Length: 260
Image (cartoon, rainbow, N blue to C red):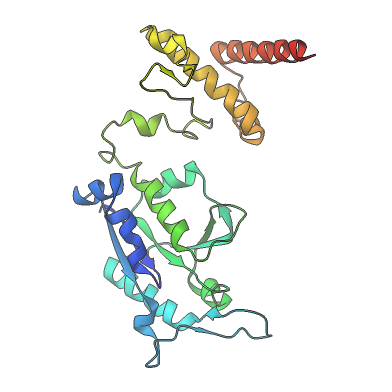
C-alpha cells in the first residue's frame, strides 16, 4: 500500500498546495502517495451544515463538535479499510521532528484531523485521536497548514519522490545537524565570493568543509540540537568530528581575541 493521508478538514481546497505543486504533485502523479479529504460539514445534522457551537462554561469563539468529526473519521477509515492512526494537528502536541516524519513516511500514512475556531471538543480527542502533533510553540488559524507541512515532509522522504535521492539524505536534521550553506552561479555576487574550497574540485576537501560548516552552524544557531547530537554519541566522536570541533573552537577563540 502506498503512503496515504486522509484529511478531515473544513477547507479541502487548501490541499491543492500539495496535489498541484512541486515535488508532492510529481510524486502523486507517480503513484507514490494518495490524498483524500473529508469535510465534516457533510455529516452535519442541520441544513446550515453547522459543525461548531458555543463552548460550555463561556468564553470567546466556537468549538468544533465531536459528532461530525467522528463521522468523518469513520468514513475515512472505512475507505482505507484499516484502523489508521488519527493525528490531531494541535499546538498542544509533541513537536514534529525528522525522526517522526521518517517513521510516518515508512508506514501507510494516517488520518489527519485539522481543527478550527477555538479547537475540538475534548471528548472527540479522548475517543478517537491517537497522537497530537505540533509545528511549534505558536498558534495557527487551523490545522491545515500544519497538515500540509507534515504531508510535504513525509512525501519528500519517499523513494523516487526527489530527482536526486541524495537531496533527502543531506537535508537538515537527517543526521541530527543543520545543513551546510549552499552556493550557485555567479561566483561573485555583490562583492561576496563563493568559498574557494567549493571551486577547487577536490571532493574530499569539499566534503570535510561542508561537515565542518554543518557542525559550526548547529553549535551556534541551535545549541540544544547540538547538545542532543553530542549526547547521542555516547561512544565518542569520530576522529574527524573531534578535529573539526577543535578547529571550530579555535576559530571562535581567535575571533573573540581579535574583537578585543
